[in-house]
Image 1: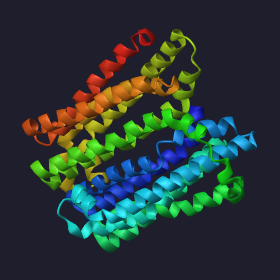
Image 2: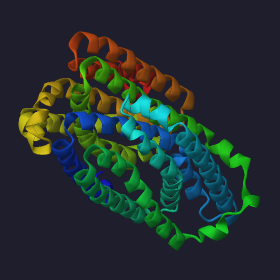
Image 3: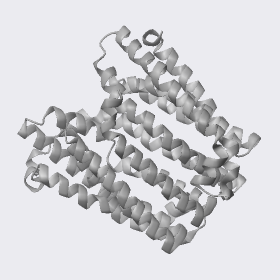
Image 4: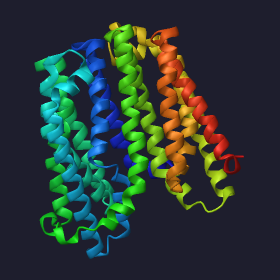
Length: 413
């Protein structure tokens, strides 16, 4: 298991390390309030990126890998996806540029100084979409090492741009860095793609095929539901915290969410690289059951032990990664960690939706989970203040886990 994941471990550790450094710089120079604004833009950008790429990433990898030797079909896939994504990205860019004031109000409230952020984002969006397409294409061609290098270079560029922009322009610099870094990565990604295939020759309008879009539609639906609606709900919850409790409290919630994302990255990597292929190949319930319980016996205990250590050291961790100004975040650790344990228990079951392409079941359960999180957060925040946000998170993940256990009960028990 760890031998398989070791290829990606350096990239993961580097990403976490860079994330920790960036978090420290953000904490020092922009504080909890600025952290909340950065979180809002990240959520908005995640949704926008996934809409611009139509959620095709996993589907591109699958169909490119299957047709690597079939030059004609590969040209159809590459041409159809590229033209579709580029067209959608351009339309979204024009729309975003023309409605920058509206989105500024929705994301940042009355802070009109940030309108420029959305205009810069509009100009950079086509680069994002094409860059994501390139990475999926390289991944589908089996050039895994190059995908890792793209991640490494991307994270390094992100760190350098963030440090420079935050030191120069504080909060506005931090927001601009989120936009500029991925746009710069486009040039490196394009260089790597050109070394694999002659991109200018393989793109041909005559190869555009609607059947390719039809094949990708189920992947698109599954990806868009989780990667678009999820960030929108997080954005809505954060804005509710800002309105009812203040921007600093929203910054504390963003901080605990950021800490959580670092250690969850290890689990998601192991699930994607090791467990997902095994679940896809499992042909009987007994095989599936064995894979589920392998995860619960070996990965889950290590994860829980790690969280216990983090909880004991929470005051030290917050001061190390951020500043003393962020110490109120330590009050959120227990419920966040409990929610993450429920989430990790559910993740392995949720991957079965992708492994067996259970599109309808995934969409229904995902929408139920997202909706539950939103309304539970509104309810709990009113009663428990900022702690209510993490209580709602723990409650939502517990209910989601119970739902998945019932749905997959024959494979699990």
